Length: 514
Image (cartoon, rainbow, N blue to C red):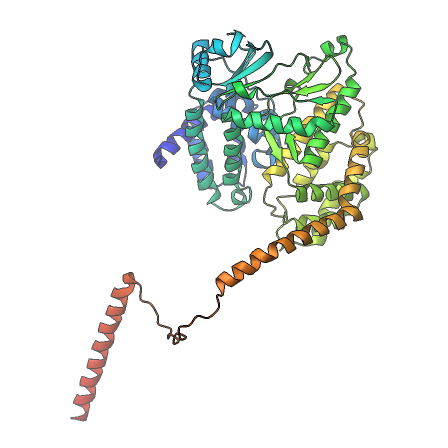
């Protein structure tokens, strides 16, 4: 176990880097920051020269691979770091100098248990991209297929293990201080970050995510997920089909290639809705750099390290919330928040409905084309503090992805109407999931499961209450207070004092009578 002094030293060292970029200023000025955290921030920035405008993204970039990924995670938490920092962290570029090819080659051969030539006839030593966790090389398999090979950086697991150890320690200290820090649940933030990085540090899990998403996207013909080469994939190496297309970061190249940008934007919206609303399993990093337009007009995605899940009940609640906001039924939206236990029960449903009205009415007053999904969700999450709502990290990841997806779609087609594009898809899904047929089907499934569980329930009851045997019933035992070993001294002292008082009383009484 790492000593607290080591954690504090690491935090001071990291804080020093953050201070040089002005990234601790918000922590010091926030009235909700616990006093010990504020003092540590002041010590870290002592003697540094800070810029007038904080550069959060550059600060996390300078801290190294683990901090880059943590900064990307914090970019989804404006409630935790503030809107200004969250917006700046979205600019965080996950680009680092590549590791030497000799190390990469050795890592591949160790992971695949064989020489490189056994699996690839061509392998480009220059990576097409190098990020904080891994780098990607282009190669040709022995079967002649063009592939992309993703390889973890040497020693990256140890680097993340050290950082996560200190992140967890710091989060536990801050959460124990109570107040706003406790409501934001920093320990849960780090726990989700650990799960997130665990997937990225085991490329077999990323490959499995890509495979699962590929199966789910079969119904969406315009969206393509590359195929995984499982024979050439392991914990530290992932091989997948090479994507030949135009990256969505280059709008001019898309136009020159003759792509229909409006159709690409509509495909992106439909694909995301199918992932998040229908399947509950979505690509949570859909920025332009991870999307390609293929020559046949389809849209392809890469980089499946960050994925999100939303269970069916949460998706139903979200659908009802969205419908209620559009129709102005704020009372029902408030009731759903209480049913989902997003709001503590000591608050008033009516007051929460009024707060929702303050968010919903300005949106309802706008033309549909001008309604922003991102602004609507941002407005909803701003009321969480007033109503002591514990943060829901899975919903925050969904919010961040929706905002990102809206930004990419609008960048492709500035005139896109997100609601009109989504409405046919959502209307059919809401009708099928919230209509009377769906309610009846759910009831039948629940009742059938209850009936099938009855035999097991009866067996457990019989095991807990067996039939009486041939032996006579045992006599009842009296209740006796059990004396704990560490309390012996207290009872002995009480007995001695009582005996002394009793003896003194007898002596006094005897002398009085004489």
